[in-house]
Amino acid sequence: MEINGIFTAIVFGLVIGGLGRLVLPGRQGLPIWVTLLVGVVAGLAGTFVAHAFGVDDTDGIELFLQVGLAALGVALVAGAGRRRRL
Image 1 (cartoon, rainbow, N blue to C red):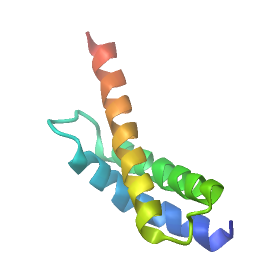
Image 2 (tube, helix red, strand yellow):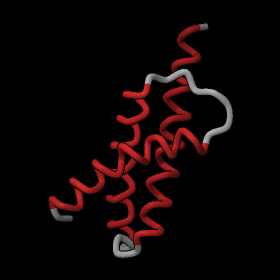
Image 3 (tube, one colour):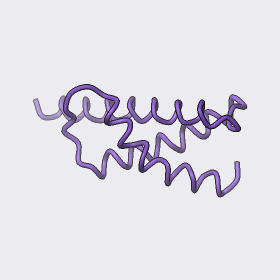
Image 4 (tube, rainbow, N blue to C red):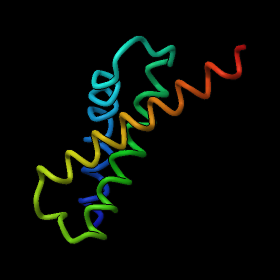
């Protein structure tokens, strides 16, 4: 993995965080910065997973992994926040 791939994953992660939030039904009580942070982590994780499986040259599969991981991350963080408030 090259540095430009990591940089691209971070930049796309900002957008992917928003997409991951839109994919989830209902309302999430997360600040936007948390959503963006989850998106960056999901973007990097999706890139590493795609690289590990050898599908990093196919942008569609990599993007699908990134958005799916972002939705999962937003759901987990939003769920963890709800449990603490009860």
